Figure (cartoon, rainbow, N blue to C red):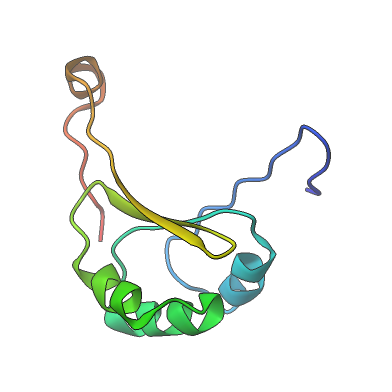
Length: 95
């Protein structure tokens, strides 16, 4: 699918595959949750992340995502509402 005016493309990667660097470089916004130290090092090189961000990626808590757009970076913690927990259950990572 090709992006265009008023059309967004969302790609979810369960791990850093061989196509990940190309996809990350083309993306306008990248969200990264906890990943392995090797994946963090590779992603750090691809995205030119500061060492502190690369070192933090393997230790991120559940619900924490590093969002990157161009040179801007922001850590965001999400927490489900009581209604979401009641409907969907407690969120958990499937590492």
